[in-house]
Every structure is written in structure tokens, then in C-alpha cells.
Image (tube, rainbow, N blue to C red; front, side, top):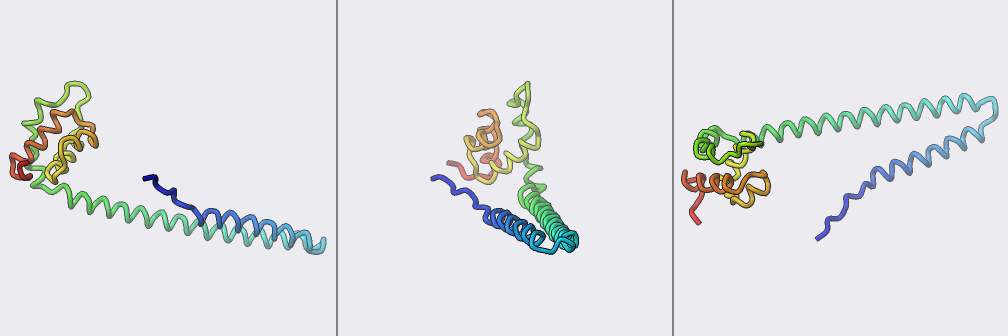
Length: 153
């Protein structure tokens, strides 16, 4: 099934509104008396700058709020997945002989794969999502079963 692209109606509406305001501003300057045109132009320019300032402040506030939320989500995720007993039970000695000599996976990737193995993911899934060699992924799942973390198939 194909995903429907996210419609950006807010951006289109903003562009349309900016075009309408620009046309209205040019009409206002053109229709005003010749002596008042600089004043009308300055007033419209000042109003445009004020609106731009409000939009910039709003965008930065939204970005900061999003970053705070992401930081909190990352902290909660780390707390939920990587507990001390999970990492203490990591089978480093059993995996060491299986690590490739050239370009071995990082310990962080191995810890993460271990946590996923203890939560029921199979070796094929670990291979695909963590780019691990097959024997290493199978050993992680085997060790998770051996340590009582997973039921035997």
C-alpha cells in the first residue's frame, strides 16, 4: 500500500496570503495620492516587518518546544530500554570470538541489538536492522534464550 504524502496546506495558504497582501499593498500605494505614497509604503513595510518578526519568533518557539520534547523522549526511551540489569547481562565474552576483524560493529550497536534480542526480536530482524553478521545475530538471540530472557521455540 502506498503512503499518501503529507499535505502542506498551511504553507500553501501562507504563500497565497502573502501574494494577496502584496497585490493589495501595491494597489494601496498606486491608489494613494502622490504625496502620500512614501508614507503609505513605509506603513505597509513596517507592518510587513512586524508580521515577519512575529512569524520568526513563533517558528523559533515551536522549534525550541520540539527540541525539549525530543530530548525528554530520548531520555525516557533510554531509561525504559537500557536498564542496568540489561547491560550487566550482556554476553560480551560469548560474542567476542564472532566479531569481524575488519570494521566490527560498535559496542553501542551491540548493546542495542542485545536489548532488542531480549525483547523478542529474532536473528534475521537483528541482521537487517543493525547490519550485523548472521552468526553474531544468532548468538545474541541464543544467549538471550540461554539467560532466560526468551522462551525456547
